[in-house]
Structure formats: C-alpha cells, structure tokens
Length: 264
Image (cartoon, rainbow, N blue to C red):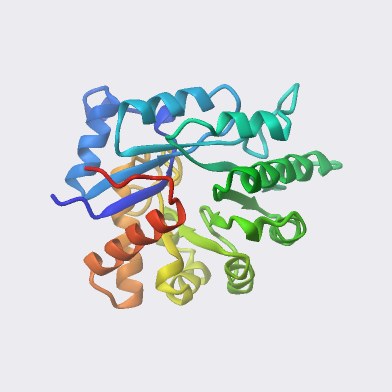
C-alpha cells in the first residue's frame, strides 16, 4: 500500500513485537501494510534517548527526539547545554516529550516546570519544535509556553485531550494539535468536537504506542499501524475522504518537523 500516514508520536523501543514475528521490522512492515510510512520515535528520559536515536539511524523513515517526560525521576537534571548537545545528530528532529503532568504528582511541582523551561530554552537554541505532554495541567502548560518563548519554535500538543479554548491558545503559540486513539473512545464526545474544529492544516495523528490503542483494539497493545484507525475516525468526523485527511496530516508533519527528510 502507498505510504500515506505519519505516526507522529510513538515509542518504538517499548513495543511488544511478539505478534509481528518478534521484531521491530515486523511491526514496521505491518504499519506499511496499513499505509503508514513514517514514524517519530519519542524519547522520554536520558537512558532511552540513545536507544531511539539508534533506531532512527537504522531506519530511514524513523525520526527521533531528545527529551525527558515530566514524570520521569532523575538524580541529575540535564542542563540546557546538555540537551542542546544531544540534538546535534541529524536524525533528531524535535525536543521532547516534555511538559507537565499533575495527574499522579503531589507537592511542589516547580521542578516539573523548571525541567519544562529548560527544554523550551534548548528548543529555542537549536530551532527545533517541541513535543509537549500535558495532563491535568493545561493552564500551567500554556503559561510556561507563553512565558518561556515557546512560540519562537512552536511544536505539537501531543495526545491532546483538553478543550477547544486550550487548543486555540496553543495554536496561537504556533502549536499543532495531535490526536491519539483516545478520540475513538466511546466517552470522548468533547474531544471529538475539538477534532472537528481544529483547522486541517494544524492537525496531526499519532498512536503513542504501545499505549492508548484505538477502537477496535482498545485494551490491547498499541502499534504504529493502528494510527490508521485514528485517521479514519477523524476523517469520518469531518466528512472527508481518508486519503485527504492522511495527505494533509502528513504534509503538516513534514512542515512542522522540517529537519525530517521524507524518504520511502
């Protein structure tokens, strides 16, 4: 099948490859069969950043990032210079995932906000977009983005689950809105309304695999090929042909992540 889609956020190093012949190549071949031709493999900590970079080095259609998830504990926080140095490799196309996650966090969370600010500063230095995680923290996320100058580089609000007002404010800062399998869940009516309203040229699709498998695979392991279900669902919501939605989201990805080279 012709490659049409990008999985704009996945964790290839964390997938269960057993159902696909036990190899990542099997997972990527399955994705290709579903029309998915490119993958952004996202870093979550200092240990797996070299792992995702190596995956991108081995696969021309895989891109990588450098970042530390807001919930990942670290004994020593990398400074801005360290983050900048880690982006030097040509397959590193963005900074993240980074952001704020208050869902399971307690106490003074200034350390999360400081980590987030350092990522934004690094992104501004290297001119690469941000991949932003925000959970139960929409106001503080937008506040930090605004105050730290994130509009200079823009980025993507990954796995978006917030309201239309939040989406509008993020887009005003130059951010794209990315939808995961959550948009297919029965209880996601409010999110589906946001997916209908986001301008087509600011929309991305993702799996966040191995998490958040879309309907009809909900509750099972997620893989990049399932991003097709997300795209088909949003296309139906918007009354568009699947191919039009796929083509536009792919164009959006390569416009945002301009360091990524379209090969296949």
